[in-house]
Amino acid sequence: MRRSAAAVASVLLGAGLVGLTPASASAACPTGWGSLPRTAPSVRNAEIVDVRTGRHACFDRFVVDVAGRGDGWFVRYVDQVRFDGSGEVVPLRGGAKLEVVVVEPIVPTDAIFLPDGELADVRGYRTFRHVAWAGSFEGQTTFGLGVRARLPFRVHALDGPGTGSRVVVDVAHRW
Image 1: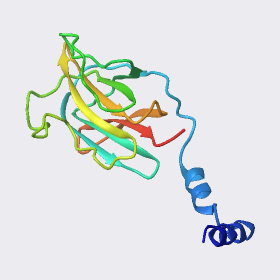
Image 2: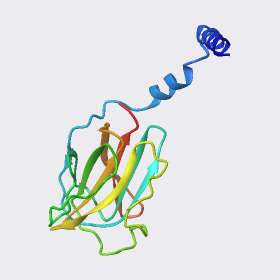
Image 3: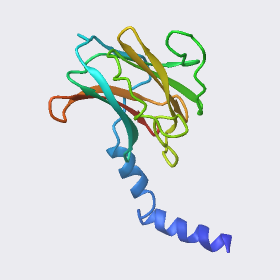
Image 4: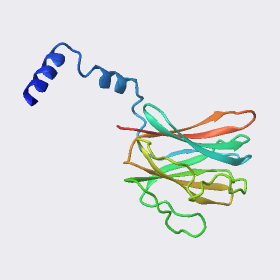
């Protein structure tokens, strides 16, 4: 049985019919983001109103919705994400920890939390393992992303919806 499967695979590989899907899929995924810290200055003129996540073919996405122009952030891999103010460790699942600091305060609300205290349900995601709150202090708000491994990421701001904006962190599924 094993021999015939190997023979079929050999014939398909020789005909160029095996390996096309993974190669074309990986060629379509962006590369070169890197894993070094990213920063952008801020004028601190908005408030965070929500957080959410999404799954894409090449990356997992973390989005911070801002009422107004959210334009400042510090994002980096760290040994431990710590709660603002207390310095206590934020427990995160995953092989690597990404600290996301958005230089805007948050609107005081419990509405963004899931019943278990987490910020998003990331079960079934390829890269994200945990999304946690780490506090808001002196005009900046910190989140912890537990990810599968130290993988490339990018950060950018997007306009909308309406007069709001979004700070977006994409973490690639692989190098």
